[in-house]
Length: 323
Image 1 (spheres, rainbow, N blue to C red):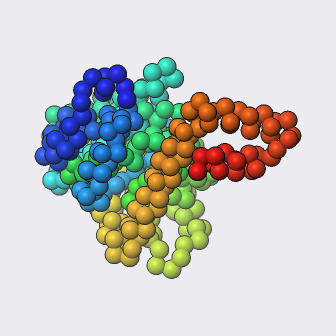
Image 2: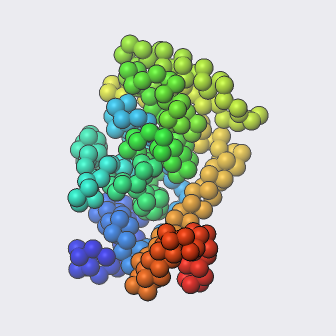
């Protein structure tokens, strides 16, 4: 637990109750407990579990410079106009010194700073290559349990590894923009394999129609099973809000489609499986960092490096010792 968190006793039932009543400070405190890996985290997650599974989780991804934060800001405005409460997790690159978020999306989304129906949190990726902090799934759980209708997860924009957001969201939005490289490069980045909705932002610029056309051509080549979702390609100018209502309509249409055929449940089960695995692996690493286990790991590493053992046998020994 961090020194700051350690100074205050955590009354989990009270904190969860206040978060469910819409108190932003309680929501912030719960997410801080997640990021700090607080000893109270197990109790927090147990208290939140009965209240989760209601929010629509939307991932927004794309290369740097396509206008993710501006687009997120515009989507939030459209959702709020529809009366929906919105939570935003903006995963920023991390400072190598403090581990804290650098870009500060809350500053860039200042339009909603005074709106009690919007909660925005910048989270540090802390070197995680998938563009998502390890704690993002649990922070999503906090916002879900706090009664937000929609949770938007905006990722860093780090190329090929950014496909991880597709495993986290009910619906994934892939943003592109003219002048950001040709469509073939986007395909190489892997993001064209994960989108449920494709958005060409900055549509008022030259080349937007070409980007949309290239997207359409590449998606037509995709091997899709019968009855699969056909991802729409939409054009927006996020700074003015043009085209954003159509994006929200597409998000709702995909949510309805995935709920009707079981895809929503399948995605959420995959997400839960990945979260369980991540927690289990983290627990194992924590145990291996303890003095006795660390010494054994060092001995096994030396044996493998010297050719006296192989890594699989060493791993088996380490796991047997931990059992």
